[in-house]
Length: 323
Image (tube, rainbow, N blue to C red; front, side, top):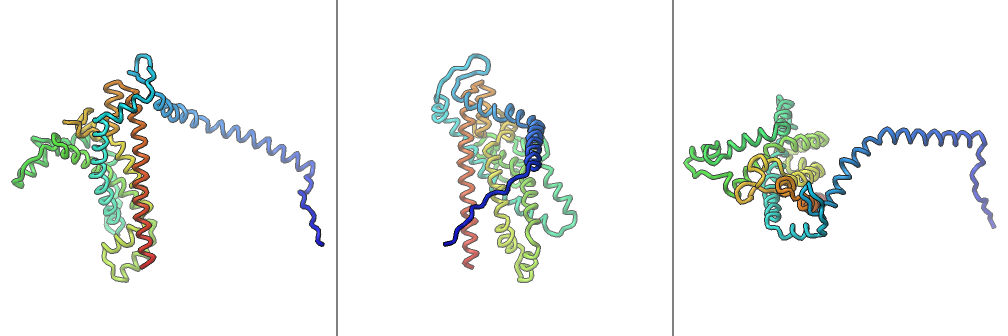
């Protein structure tokens, strides 16, 4: 019967143990110095990042006007929020503006990136030109779009009159306000997303495009059968970031139609309504409750978008395998 000898670790020499102990001591001191070096970041993050989050959650259970004493009201702010018709209207407005702005914005960005990835003269100048709207002052953008969509003397109504069509009171009608805000979003963020798509396009092997040309594929076949499927992770990223940005829409409607969201609050988004309640009406507890409601909606909507885009990609992959 074979016997096995238990394996034992070799004895450690006293010099080696001393060396290890000294190394451990040095490592600990080095780690402490490293932690001390990066501690300002964590301290500032705790003060300006974690504390406001925790305080907003605490504030959502209080009734506070920003000056007097806080009064604990439990879940009353959340109960009022669920029965507030303006809150629900702001949610509907946000989703409508997101829908009519994000889908064309990402499509235009993808087409522009595809065109910029071709061998054209002055390609770098075009890339800079498409990114300029993203760094332009939003106030200047709002003034320009306000003159374009002006009810009486706007350029858009002048063009409609030139075509013998009826004019539209863009900033007084429900859909006119949303179209004006969505146009500002599209103009500002299309170039930004195009640059992200362009970075993804440059990671696609050029051999695929050359093989498609040899097989006689035209430009649209290359775009829809090579570019779009291989850019699916980048598209998913832009969908998620655009969803988060769309749910946080604030500056464009605030500058274009004011803090009240325009006639009938048709331009009031969720964040604009939060700002109005907290900093205009001094209802900080209710504003904090709206902020946490917005957080839950953003998480759920991002998960739905992620599932839809992932599901579409998986169906496309299965079709490719069967083909």
